[in-house]
Image (cartoon, rainbow, N blue to C red; front, side, top):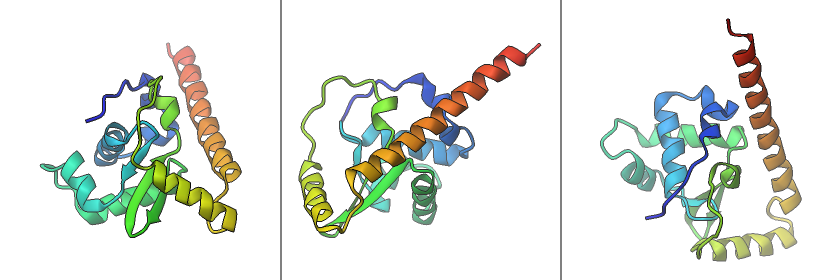
Length: 153
């Protein structure tokens, strides 16, 4: 089991603020069970069993939530050799981990880079631009939060 030190700025992230309770639970669960590079198994049954075994969270809801996260550039979903996985795009911002450990998804990343060279996958520059967009959204949310605190009576 991985140990995480999560930055409290996640609570004011614009991507996180307007999520429902179950979606927040799912997002935090993914953050906690992902490896040191932000990779996680994306099988719906696995996520339900690890994150919310006792909650009424259907596999259809998990799939819809993952689609929402992908649309907001919070995750990237991949399928390698029949196994689904996802990577959190803003993982390094919310995770205060300094020294990374071995990742079982490094082999998947190597395969992705090989496919990228062949032109089948998004390039690292495209991924970086998505990450920059997510960071800009986060900074905008923090600015709005600061402005709302200064305008309170």
